[in-house]
Image 1 (cartoon, rainbow, N blue to C red):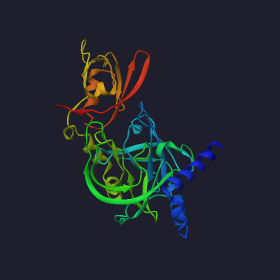
Image 2 (image 1 turned 30 degrees about the horizontal axis):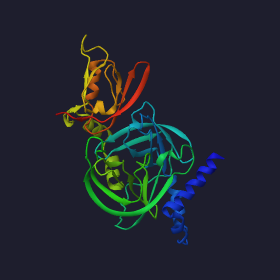
Image 3 (image 1 turned 45 degrees about the vertical axis):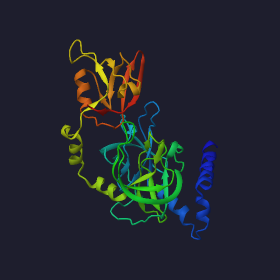
Image 4 (image 1 turned 90 degrees about the vertical axis):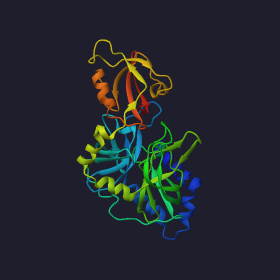
Length: 336
C-alpha cells in the first residue's frame, strides 16, 4: 500500500510541477510516456556510504550490455560496498573501475547482463530551447523497483565552466550543458538527461552551489565527455589520477599527537581554527580511523592517505570519539 501511494504521488508531482502529463497528452503518439518508460530500463539506483548529512545514494546510467555504469563521483562510493539496483529491483554489488575528479564521474561494473543501455558512440545533436527530460533518484524516492523521478525542461546553452567557487563547492571543470530543469537535488547526480526521442544528452551533474549567492546550477555532463571518459584506458587513467606529482598538497587543518613515534595511532592533538577540520567538527583527542576509505592505523598511514587527496574534493574521515565511531565529511584545502 505504501509503495502504491508513493508511485501515485510521483505521478502527481510529475504532472503538477512540470506539466509532463499535459505535454504528453498533446502528443498523439504518447511519445513522452514511452520515452520515460524506456529510459527507466537503462538506469540504476546507486547506494553506498553515508556520512553525517551527506547523502549515501545517487543515480546512474547503463552504457553497455555487460553491466558498465556511469554515475557521479560522491561519498557514497567511498564505502566498502556499493550496491546497484536495476529497474526490476534486483540488487548487485558494483566494482569501481575508475573516477574522474575534473568531471566528477565514476565508472562502475556489475556482474550482470544489461541488455537495455545507452549507446555513447552515437553523437546526439541538440540546440537551445530543445525539450529535455531529466530522470533520477532524487531524494531517494525509489529504493526498490519504484520508478525514478522525472522533471522536464529545456536546454539553455552549452558552455565551459570552472566551478571552483570555494572550498565547499563542487569542483567541476569542463564543458557542460545548462538546462532549465530542477535537477540539483540530493541523489539526482548521475541521472539521465534525454531528449524527447529518448537519446542521451548527458548525465545530471553534481550539485554546484554558490555559497555567496545561495544559488545552484542545473546542468548535464555532455554525452561526448562521458564517451571520452569511458573510452580511456582504465589502467592509464588510474595511474594518471594516482600520481602524486599531479596533486596539489592539501591541508586538513589538523595537528596530530606525534609523541611516541610515527607508528603510533593518529590522535588529533590540535585543530586549527577556521581550517577544514574545524569547519567539519573534528576535535582534539579524536582518533582517526580512516580517510577517504583508506585505513589509518598510524601516523605513517595518515600521511600516506593525505597524499592521495585533492583540494576542494569532499571526503569522509572516520573517527573514534570516546565510545562513538563517527563518519564526518571534510573538504581539504590547498596547502599554503
